Length: 83
Image (tube, rainbow, N blue to C red; front, side, top):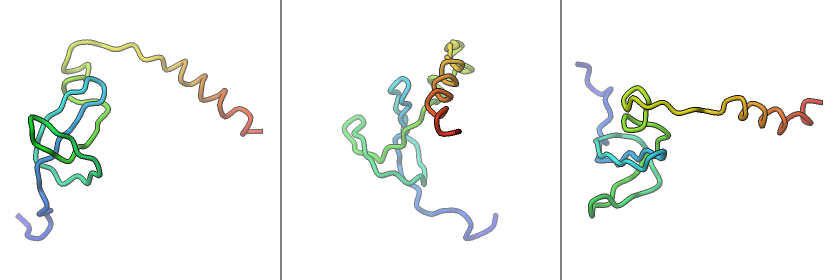
């Protein structure tokens, strides 16, 4: 293993899934500005949109995503700027 290439600032970080409010703690070097109290202990928090507890592959549940509506909203919002 090469020396000097691995970060040394590992610490416990709370990762929070924003879609279902699930929180899990693991060691990480991710930079965060916010903190959260989990089970009486304060941790730096990293917010995620999806994790193993909300991803359809792991949960077996699929979510219907309105991609057509999102595209239409984007086109309507920026239609005047293209001219």
